[in-house]
Length: 363
Image (tube, rainbow, N blue to C red; front, top):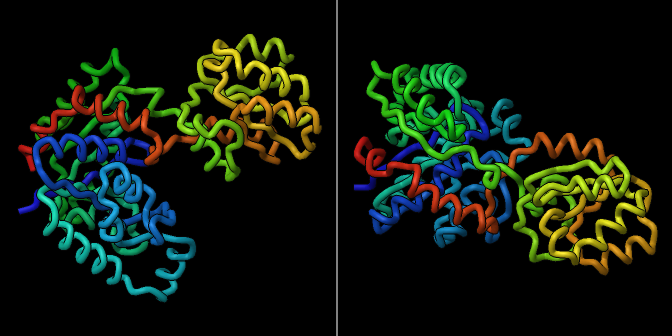
């Protein structure tokens, strides 16, 4: 019989995909066949000729189960899907039938199946298949991922638990993630007190990690919708700091921190030339990950030649430097199949922080 676990969360960006990757890695140490499923896919890409959820494609690539990716992403929410359901053009029974059928086939192939939800408990309601409904429909005990903290976590859990209880879905595990290291013990102690009168296991995942939270150059390029130029070998480089190049060139360079993504206005020839010239110096290459060149004004020919000759990674956009700076500061990084550094770190940290045996025992 296939064991199942549904990975839900109190909201977006709690770390469901990180936890799913961790559990895939840990489960494979115990079970010979471990599968993955993203029943509702709100963010889709083309993968092997199919339109599937990004997380399903990523897990398929990382764990070598590309042949099952269609089953792993049975229902995708593409542009216009919501309106078509509300207008009655699409049958509300279709998503549930597709999810059930895919899950049954995956259960026959795997010993342990990880089912990742989308967003908070209510996501998917518009198609009659929110997270709580799906967990109940697939008869999968739920693990609810939360952020770090105490009061806000308790409030968010209670809000989501009400929906799971309404749908008769069973939440067996609360997993606090992105914990502040010095507050880890205290936070877990208070969360355990808050849910001591329930049958829910309160456990923990990772401490907050800039390496996992910060975007790679490739993610930035995808986020702004423009290609990454320069050294392609730096695509997976993580940008720990985003800096606006508004001061003098010397001051900007002197203030560079570790692995900085520098946003420069296209008319600032001196700064563009200086940053490009420093790309070959190891000390500055460590501090300068790449550039976003912003603005409608064309980069001068000679400056563009210097940028290209330096092979420094850069992204060219027409928006203003301040617009892209604030957008990127709000952007939350998602893990992709090419993020080898992040994936390897997740697997290492999973063994250190996640008690898989305790989770497995309660399923």
